[in-house]
Image (cartoon, rainbow, N blue to C red; front, side, top):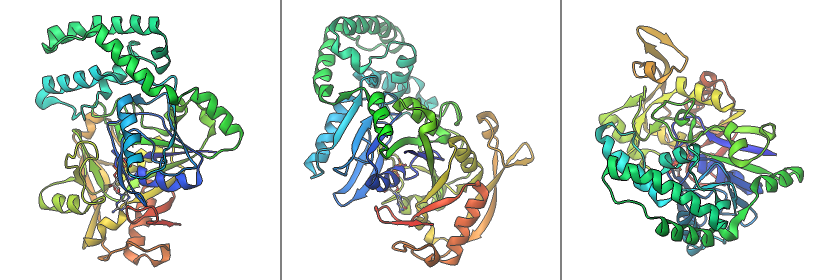
Length: 424
Ligand code: GDP
């Protein structure tokens, strides 16, 4: 049985927490896209962790953690992440890395940094982890597959081709030091030795696991609105954030994904540039940012303050639809307990007309939020474990959101910890 855990919004919905929680009952957890550019914050009995590349199921000793072929694999980063868990007392996780995953090279990080500097004020808000240059190379067919590290001739030819092309850009566009073939080959040899113990034909492994009836989780990074096709292009990430891509990025049949748990945040937050219709500013935003998440809404990778906004039902309904949500986990609801009343964005006004359909980016830039205001519940809901025990106005908020997005909310998260969850 394969379940996907994906985001309906702009990321940071709390997928890590939900994955960590559901991993308890699972055998295999897979990352299928993205790289070390976003982080998942997890709080459990070992402490508080910010994971970037490892799936959020690594904290149990019964789980196998997999880096699928769709991931941008930063090898030293992965090794360090494993090391840092072990140093903090987490049992050494069982990790498998797809032989078809491609490698994020040091020059991808350089190109990301150079391009952000070149674009200056017009940049896309990259985390400078090399993700966009990595995926560009993958589709330009000059990416490096894990399997290629193990063939000296193939890797030399690939690196020569890479240097030939990159050095033209480095010299003439960025005016930066050139890449050196021998130096990169040495890096590749080091990477090969670091990754060798983990390499696996992941798709074949999963084929077998599915046949044996194992419970498998696909953990998405970011959310629907950052998907390169269905999100707010071009202010998106470089790999698909959708559950459907889980089939490709892990190498399993699409029809095996039976359950798509779409994580929805009780208010909005986003990092990076791009239209954000229900965004709020000033003191109102500062207060929500300060109270938000666990210890404030600041990026897990960059520490950047997140942009804040009220719940956006238009974006979230679309986000759930494009994920193919079969159920919703509604998170960080506890954060809203301080508000007298809570605005919810229920429509967009574009060129004088109100719509509930999420538009393409060009129109989105012109959209103004249409709000409905709900009464707050003015109390701390952390620690509550039964839906009926939630304050009436809190249940009304949940039920209003459910009505608007059209997907059953099966889980309500009312705190960052593993046990802060209400099943409905
Ligand atoms: P992800 O990328 O979707 O995994 O989300 P992040 O981990 O980047 O951001 C979610 C933040 O909210 C983290 O700091 C979590 O510890 C925290 N969090 C998750 N669920 C809840 C919740 O229900 N309540 C509160 N207060 N914090 C939560």
